[in-house]
Amino acid sequence: MDEISWLDRLELFRWPLLSALVAGIVLPAVGAFLLVRRTSFHGIVLPQFAAAGVVFAYAILGWWIETIGLGGLTLDDALHDPHAASTFGLVWGGLFTLGGILLLVVSGRRGGSESARAAAGFAVASAAVLVLGRLSPIGRGPVDELLAGEVLGVGVHDFEVLAAALAVAGLLLAWFGRDLLLTSYDREAAIVLGKRATTFETLFQGIVGLAVAAGTLTLGPILVFGLLVVPPLAARPWSRSMGGFVGLSLAIGAMAALIGETAALEWDLPLGPSVVLASALFLAPAAFASRRT
Image 1: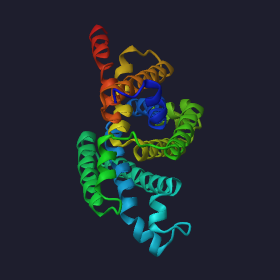
Image 2: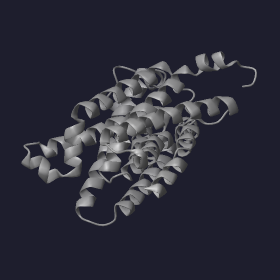
Image 3: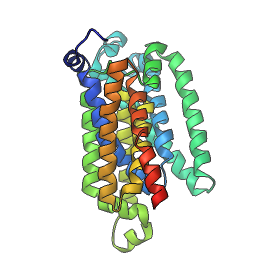
Image 4: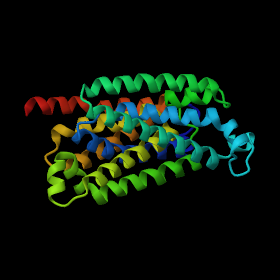
């Protein structure tokens, strides 16, 4: 890419770059709430469930069109229609994500180690992705690219789906943030204060499902769980309030996106892993701050 100017690169890859930046701004906020709720492991396993849902959508696409139909589209039409493919994948990615959340919540009520449950879920979802990928009519190539974070082919329609979903998730977090925080910290106190704890817990799980499914569909599981987990971990030692914690997490996510994008374009690296590694640069100062406190 040495012969292509930076302006040409930005023009050519503007949609994947904008997608990663939007994800870097919103996903760390979701991850901050997961960390407060002591469910950060969900940020690792849920993107894999979402990936399984997206791959499953492609695996059943031919059968679905023949049996149920998809707006009158043929399989070839659906594979070349960005809106149809994105919407179908988002729905199934969301369903698998919510299913993963339900499994983690139900199994958590029975006791045991959260890390063990998350590890088992990650193993099962990862295996499902690989098996379902072999059944996909689009072949292994796109599935492998999604899993590896090779997302420079993201188009305007993919960006629109991601931006809309993350905008809804971000606005809901901002609007109901205090109630979600109270419910996360002390459910009994929230009930005493007249809050509908179950409603807010369900709302939060829906926000997580929407953000994770849309992010994974567009950018792959590596980038999504990296942004959900790493920026909040890097921000926590420096934060003295929930607002500061979320704000710093977002700032780190945005800076990591910009640094990772620059590295990916300069050295022809996969975008997703580059952003995650860039976010990891902020963990060293966080470790130093933790030792001082």
